[in-house]
Length: 300
Image (cartoon, rainbow, N blue to C red; front, top):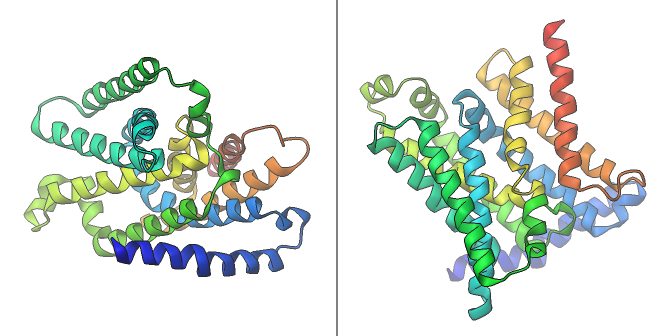
């Protein structure tokens, strides 16, 4: 724990200020003078490869509803965090939403593996449970719903060094997992029995990917919000699938469209015409535009 705290202090005190200063000098436009815009662009650069790597698997393995259930579990996670914060000021809703998302993800994976129920049925049960739990906590505690606005709609223009540091840690975790188990994970998603016959620990990889997906979803909520976070995973990967001719190509196309959507959406929201529109929504709309364009190109 002390090593983690020391690394976070080094990140926020040395590395991030150096990166921020470099971006300030490189970016020529007026919006580059504002730190919140530089932080937002840095978050796009950090999250785009992460969402692309996981989103490709989500699209190919038809797990969009699963990621949606995880994102809505954040509603209960934030409610628990705010409730604990009243008694324990050190409690951070950002941490409780991540932890609760991990618990829900593991719960879905466990029930799916140990029952005969279909995947969408299990996910639907958990989806309903976490939303009802969040509403129950909010209404019982009397918390104002305005406290949840940042988590519902996203707020990429209000990030701090801790948020960016969490994205860096997430990126490292995703890279390590993908390098170590990319091919095995593809085989597990295609055919469980074939993967098991090749000596692959199917259940272990299923749980690990579930945890990774839960982490990506809960961390990305700060960018697009509970209502739109699934779009960050699904739309760039779906756009890539329209154009790619291989699994590797789909991965790189997804990164490209994720970066384009994030950067274009963030810059567009800074304009005077869209300055009152949520940045997360503009990013998702940019993703939709590229998806429509890729569909047209594929048709042609």
